[in-house]
Length: 617
Ligand code: PEP
Ligand code: MG
Image (cartoon, rainbow, N blue to C red):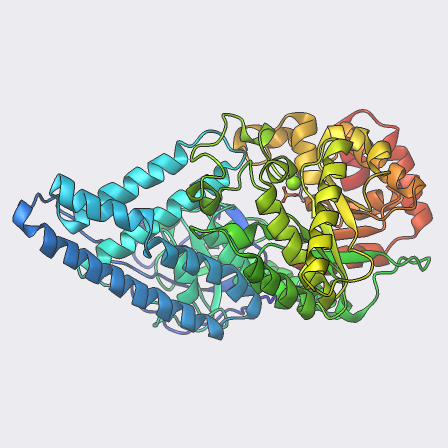
């Protein structure tokens, strides 16, 4: 990740309108005391600079009823606002080319989601219907429709990903705000006056604003609102801008021009820092940038332990625009391609040819490094409109979707969907080393049935004259349920490789929803029950001399690398940004030390003791 390194600057900053924030009362002339505010650390790094406030005039909407005769004109106003919004979003998208590649990878899909929503979407249809049937103005219809849609998303049955639901609802509201601004001709906020080295402090920063920011000028960011799992946080991380969001009282505490220190690691914002605080912040800034440089320098070095054991570090891919990031990270392949992206944000299913093209270009881009493509893992938090509109899955899924028709279960029922994807992967596999991965497997019958279908598809393709590799790409399985982990010895006889998905494995083992804030403290991949399952599955694979890797979030946590290596694992797939940190951890240890650590850890039954041993906490 590129990191903005900001020094204190004294450039004058644009004054914010008086209405923007309340001033703190103080004796005129008296130095303002230092104040430290606490928020959520969302993007690492330290920023020191003057505050820039970016005010935005509110859009005022008066609820208006219209006459039936005016519905056509009102619909035309709405269509014009849609066209204008589309133009603005396309312009924002075109501007992305100025941002670093990793930032583009984060922001582009969001802008695409906005564009999708103002295409021939449920939202647009809903607004038109409201204008015609409830006889309200276009602004009123937009507000009513977006509120109803956002509320429907939030009220969806528990799907294991409340953060995802919040994000989707926020996307709908954001599109509504844009449409209303255009309908009421209210100007959008501008960041054009942002002086180099300034810290943006405002009540709220919307994800699309990130496309307007210039990360080379912006030192840091702090906002009153926002949380760690929102799009804005993801964008700021991708832009490499140190940021703290959700800082209660920020609006009252700062005014334009104040010097602030934003600590994106500790999650603090210090207003009017004393000379001592400033000196300490400068020291932290220097240490942080040195650590970043050190990580960047690791890119071309092997992931080798001090006793010369090579470890395989690969990257997970969620959307193709991440590809440049993966190459930059020095990953040795794609260990988990989550193919869900191909099916999302669209109303029809992707054809075999379309899928083949996407897989082929990804395999091509990896230039001989292996690519493990996981077939569609629908279910749980993954909401795929195309599957609903084509009637493959119901609009509202089961009460308990995490335990329902997820992953391989759906594919074995909807064989046409499965066969199309397998055919596309097989056709693309001539472009380079490929593996096929089955999600949510719990028993050997599923693997056998999937393999029969796989071989049948290959035979059909060969009959059709397709050029397939003589030996079909290996067919592996995710170990992500306790059932699969505990029958790993039997599954190892059926599968060609294992990929241990510790995210779901932790969720299903501990009965803790992986996205639920209320039980977040109980979600613990270091719980002995989870570790024993990881160990059991790993040993089953190693006995069969079968490849085994970890591709859940555990793989990307460098603090856990020695333990996982001590358990016997040598292959990890993680988010691209984590590759350098994990490589650093690998290069600092010897296998013997890892084995000793794992022995001590695996004797423990108290999670707190395991945390002490592994995390030192
Ligand atoms: C997992 O469950 O650990 C995993 C890698 O799959 P996903 O996060 O896509 O469910
Ligand atoms: Mg999973």
